[in-house]
Image (cartoon, rainbow, N blue to C red; front, side):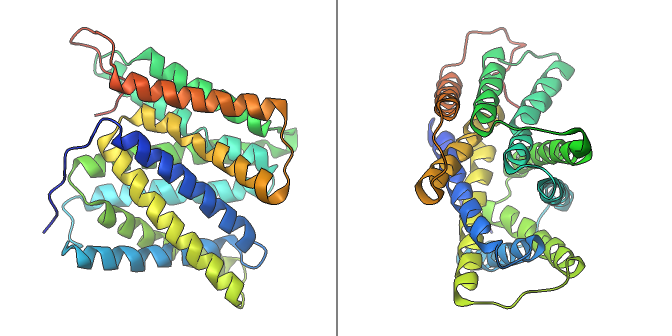
Length: 307
């Protein structure tokens, strides 16, 4: 049994993806604080366990079954998402934080690559203006983070780049699941189940669990709750919105994270960072406007989307 869905409004997907970007940034703050006490595998496991419980409760409250007609799509989404997460953690182990973050945010560029490739493969022409918005937003990310990469870090840099590619595939699998009629809670539930298994394995490889404190437990609970809410919003946004518009707006996560850093950790505010934030916000506004006002095209054009 599933719920009847209301038709999405023109601005609903951009608002959802912006909200998801903010919640993911807040989650990243909790992860940063929790990492002083827990390993990466533990954080993934506990974050996912909270998601399993919350999604199970929501599914039960909505009388929505766990049975799915597209188990293969769920498996693909979980494999791509967890593969990207694990490679990102591996890359962060040797790369400067700014470089690791930048490489992970290539996911939006990869989304554009996949969308354009799918369009050309089917004889259609994507909206080049959205592609430019994606690239402009990534330029803003680079201005804020100013990544660097040394020769001895090339393997980790490649891992970071592939993590972005896999994350992009995960987002597009999420879109396919949404278009197949899968409820957001079910999509997030199965991804969380896979996250518990992967996190537990990483935790055991990393030496086992660490003892809890009240502060640590609250940070893990907050991480899981924020991640679950963000995943729900992102999943819905990709189900009803345009892939490349969502990809541009996801860059706002860097702006929110930068704001947290300045507010809580006294990170410096530089001219390049301000220029980068302006470029990201401008690209997001442009992409949202373009999604609402498609250009006049021939019947062979598509508006920068993957359907």
